[in-house]
Length: 89
Image: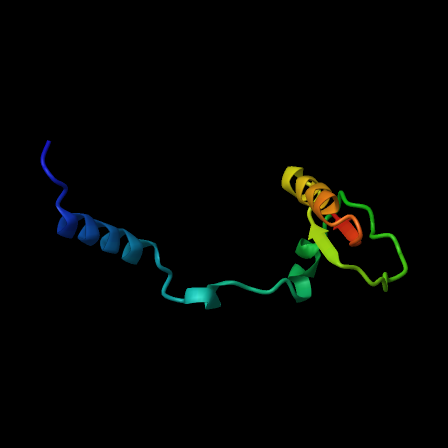
């Protein structure tokens, strides 16, 4: 098996990138304003519930209650039981 031709690979990637780039750049995108405003709405989601803001003093905030968020919050609670840990999902 021969070594890959790096110059040919770079040229191929540069050609593919140039082919995919849009001449308008990010100006090709439109904001969801005016007649497009309704596209920003999720028709299947209920409206957000009103709730009071939380003004709480805490030591650690873990954002995300997935596997690692739960693990991090629990582990921090084990290592520093005198600290307050808040888990937000």
